[in-house]
Length: 123
Image (cartoon, rainbow, N blue to C red; front, side, top):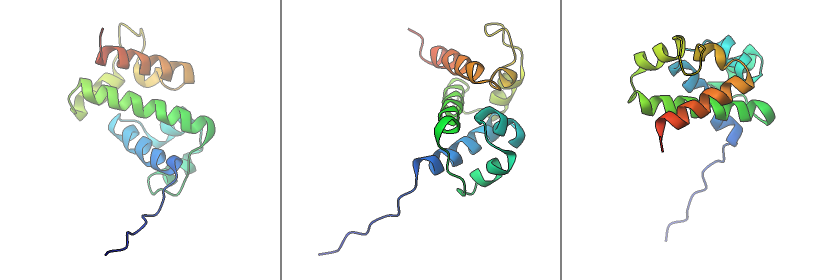
């Protein structure tokens, strides 16, 4: 009988940190923009990609919202990276703003997230 091995546990904040870093790259955001959006320092953003920084509190919540923005937009554009970056950088008539600029505040991030969630799964 084989003995089961226990896999090392990774903190949710570390996993989300890696995910939000990758999502921000796919959305065409710079490290400085990501830092401003989730409320951490640019140095912390550089540690996110290597799993050397654990998100918690408000940065964790804002990062989760940004990952939702990515997931919804990715589904809408069927994984087309060029379309995703173009959508983020273009004026949106429904939002009456450029999404890349709108997500720089917490209310704007939630607004874009809700807009994309609604567009992804219309009733």
